[in-house]
Amino acid sequence: MTPITLSTLFSEFPFPYEQDRQADPEITLISSDSRQVQPGGLFVAFPGETADGHQFIPLAIFRGAAAVVGEQDMPGLAVPYIKVKNARQALAHLAAAFHGYPARQLTMIGVTGTDGKTTTCNILYQILLAAGCKTGMISTVNAVIGNQVLDTGFHVTTPDAPQVQAYLAKMVEAGLTHVILETTSHGWAQYRVDACEFDIAVVTNITHEHLDYHGSYENYRAAKARLLTGLGKTKPKPQGNYGFAVINHDDASYEYLHGIPGPRMLAYGLTDKAQVYAENITQKPEGISFTVSAAGLRFEVSSHLFGIFNVSNCLAAITTAVIGLNIAPHFAAHGIANLPGVPGRMEMLALGQDFTAIVDFAHTPNALRVSLETARLILAHNHRASGSEKGRVIAVFGSAGLRDREKRRMMAEVSLELADITILTAEDPRTESLDGILDEMAVGARAKGGLEGKTFWRVKDRGDAIRKALQLASPGDLVIACGKGHEQSMCFGNTEYLWDDRTAMRAALSEYLAIAGPTMPFLPTQEKS
Image (cartoon, rainbow, N blue to C red; front, side, top):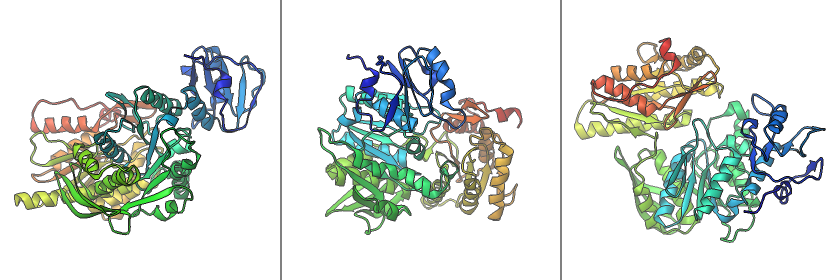
């Protein structure tokens, strides 16, 4: 393997930079974490949310850094120093260069949106596999490289730039041709997926989320839109360039995204105003089915997923594959039928109880609304099928600390509107007061006529909140725990505690049914409950 030198990394660097000396050391790794630096490493320093990486330059050099990149003037360092305007953005391009620009050898499909990203990625992945495309996937759940499945972390949204480029390099090495990469607004705002050279952009929707970080809906929308505007920066690839975007005609973001110049726009939706749309939609607890109409094509689709929102997610994947990539419709139908479900997305858990128990990832007002609407449809279907009394929806959820505060009230209001019983609980309070978060949520519940102790409760410990929901459940009811889904930890203070809502639900159900089962995971709130 040819040694990678500092000058090699900067040979195609697209931004101005200043280097304080002509030394050209060999670079063995790239990191923005001084604790991970090893001899020969390139340390990239930039201001973070809690600390400034420039403060850790001496530590990085002590650990063997061969060179440093940063944004500030740093005279007198013992190793070469390169000053750039935006070190976060530089990190992405340098990581791509370190791995030989792997995205240039792949057809890159980026999927973003507030809700539905992971599900859409998984649907599209199955379609491409059915069509015989050698496909990899990087989502908030995992990275899939052939038969290898790698965990992408606890609360990671989009992995950091060096991780993303390392995954892409592994995919090239494995002989893959297509990659589906789930991208978040944080990932775009922090330049984690710059230098991924996307060919196709898919946007599921843009609703109320992360306004604490972005400051406004407009800024949040603009961060998402970087996926579309970046298509024009992709260099010619040996396999050809697609350069199209797939957008949701039913979403409020449609007009804004449709007005972005450059890429070819393909719109999907639930009405014939879109280029690709669904007709004859049937929803049952065992799944959805519908007819796809697009560009003179009509074909039937059946999925194990359920909920009208998953019709939209299927349409996003179908539009990308069938219209954009010219994949035959029967491969799309076959791929969708092959997907059994997505971890932590409307995932039913049955241990023999006489009510329905579901774990879902819904953690935004819009996602909670569609999840609860789907829950009501499931109850209505169960009622028609069994002739039993109509059941109740019992919702358990929280709202994260150090995140968008407005959605705390909004989510409580949604639940009081659509659920019969609401239980407010912990969801990653971080360094905020859990009592304070629950107080804000209770304000929203009362604003919708909620009566504490009758239609809504506050239970600080999430395990106890799930137990409370099961205690309140009657035969035919539906209990749904929202907000954590597939995630494997919950943050209190600065500590991540191992937590999986599915394990917690199984533990609570086992206790309820007096059968053997997993132990309820530990949270610090157990000590105070």
